[in-house]
Length: 511
Ligand code: XMP
Image 1 (cartoon, rainbow, N blue to C red):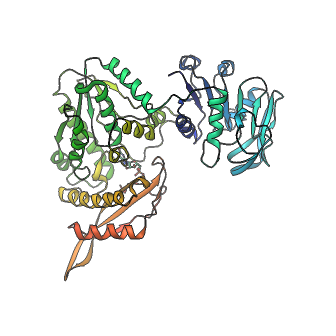
Image 2: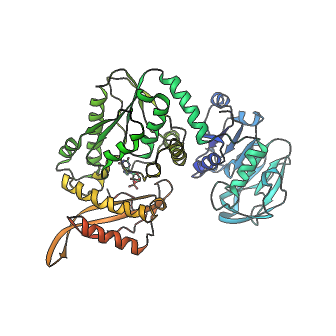
Image 3: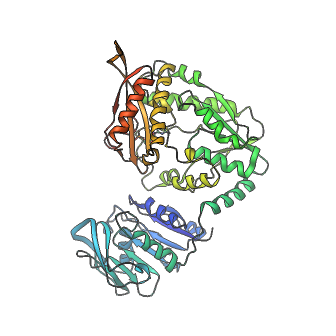
């Protein structure tokens, strides 16, 4: 990949958005912490650098600063918010706390439609979020745009290819932000948009083949988007050398194993090993009600079962995982991974005695890119657009103790909700939706008889990455239909409620 852009992360909440916007312009980019060494920077060989925003103030002693070498590389640099202040301070300008803190929508007046702001109107809506501002602009810079409160909303160096913005072009509220990024990448840096799902697939296939040779690769297949796309890509590259293992924990969605079989029916020579471990998992969960203990038991049991099956194969040298780019960035971020509120167990650990090498073909991709790759590989839309599903599965959606009967009830209710969402064109409009079985019995009437059965809750949320979420505003008529069907068709449930909580303060799952 020649057209690479480096995003230096100074800790802004929007850094990932910059990367996603650049990728959407079909340019490859990577986020690295601002502490990246000069050596690493040279070997990455970016064609341009973007300096992100930051919660820090440039006038603080602890101010995060990049290696000075970035200013000597001779490549274009775009500073955003804190990145702008950093650039100005480097050239001897002054940054001070703003008289008036700017946060939210603002209008810029464009003074100079320089290449960076080409094709924009004279007045543009932008998103500001800063408490420091430039008070003294070095003479080597010119002003491209101003706002009522910021005389320096966009600037350009007079001789060097250095540009900076006080506002955030990466957020949706900056209406033509993407145009500004496009101008920077296409016009100023002169990049050709060559990062597409197709080129990614071709390059990955080559890379996988040369890495794997004639060895075998095992993979934990779960039915989710990431492991399914990983499997499809590996199959393209190495065919039958791929050995997928599907561990049915007995806590999965309705007919999940059959669905996986259907998905891969197009690859008849792919030998998926199905392991029905439902009883093992349910036995270990007997008497357990604490959510974190459930998670630990399920994670541990998964590793045991997976390792046992994996060790039966011969000649295995690799373990494939569906790791995505956000996981990679999170573990390398400035502040370390965000605080663990719930422990997450998706994949089994490496079997100790096997010394497997990891292979993670999706580790450069964002979720939307994984979906594009999946589509291009011919996977059905119903898989590619699937909602996320937690590793511990239905065990964290059955509040309290888990048993086979409750799993069965929940699977049926969940299937009704999900299939209704799909049939009514609402599935892709919600980020995640599912049913939760509550450990509460309630009185009802069924025919002439009094019933005393369980309550379930419908949960549907809108979100971007699951970190924050709001409940989905599904139409009442739709909810009524789902509730009627569940009460009529699922023996064991006689009352349905809808969850109106957002995250925070609630979480998406109930346990
Ligand atoms: P919460 O409930 O924390 O969920 O708001 C955020 C996202 O994470 C998923 N989730 C899990 N995924 N193992 C997983 O692999 C887990 O233990 C787990 N708990 C929550 C949840 O479904 C949502 O998409």
